[in-house]
Length: 216
Image (tube, rainbow, N blue to C red):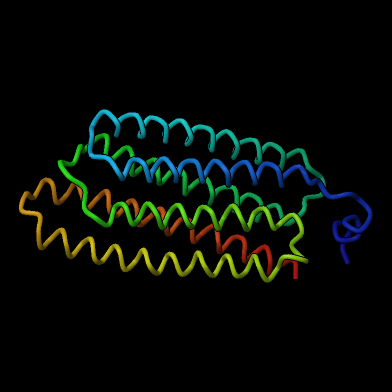
């Protein structure tokens, strides 16, 4: 048994990370909520307002992530492994960044219309964000909440599978119905970014599962 392991029995763990992760997950939900609004309008002025709001939330997410990393450097004993804290924070940040990427593509490309699966993707991303927030909240007491955390992670995996189906539906619809090659390229890139956001949410789930395995 090394000295770090021994010290963990006697030195209180730094629990300041839990409020930061909760704040990070709540910011993710807000970002996903604005994405849903963005995908419900084709009005350019409204789109611009929502894209701007998503960018603001992305900046808030970056600030929270930096605070977590700063706290990590100051903490002697952490609630779980340092690399897992860093991974979880980075993965949540990646989801917000990717949602922002979808918004920026809409701002840049100004597609004439949306394809129907965009709205469905926004809903999947929102539901994934809710599951992430739920899991993060339960991690304050991982021993008592292990089953519920794992169940929530499985739900995120299921949502990612649904996103794969939506992506294939969207691609099929695009190549079948979109006659303008420039519009096809624009809409395909937006679709790919939305699918990537769900993949990033699954990365958060994987990070949480890794933590739970180590705490078992």
